[in-house]
Amino acid sequence: MIKKFLILSCFVFLFASSPEAIIKKDFNENVLPQILEDLNKNGESIIILRVYKTPKSITLKTYKVEQTFAKSELFEKKGDYNQGYKYYTKYILKPSQIKVTDFVKIIGAKTDEDLDTLFANNGKKLIEVLKDQKQFIAIKGIEKIIKKGKLNDLKAFLKGVIAGKVPASCS
Figure (cartoon, rainbow, N blue to C red):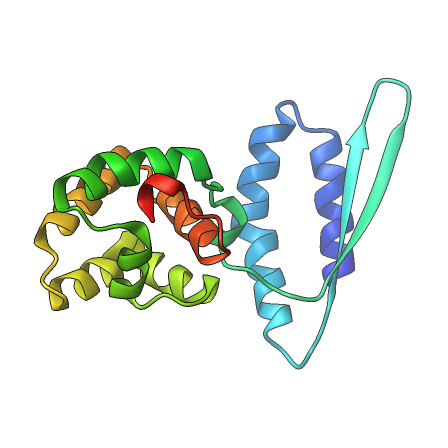
């Protein structure tokens, strides 16, 4: 059934007047929920057929999907280590005088997975941990970083610190 649906969707995409908008809408409303439903069954995998139409030819490409990801993981912007360093020094290090190695100890992060859980839901768990540790100046800095939309950069910086990439001015 899914194969018929995918083939039918591909033909609709080929002959549509504005294919990008229709592809995005159809994928989000029809294809993605079906994929998630099928993958939640007992170990099934899905084959996605992608069609490229050019004036001279049509190219078909297939993908086999065996694992599902949350939508936010698919579209999450990757952070920049250098930008994270900049925002950490500006909003956390200078006002609160907490060195980054001490900050990582305060929040209790030992692995990248720990950081992922702390930074989930726009850093709510991170703020809770800092409240428990009574680091109110650092909380204000984190809130400013969240307002600027640079939380992923801070997370990338802290992941680098956990991996051993500690700047000399922050250690």
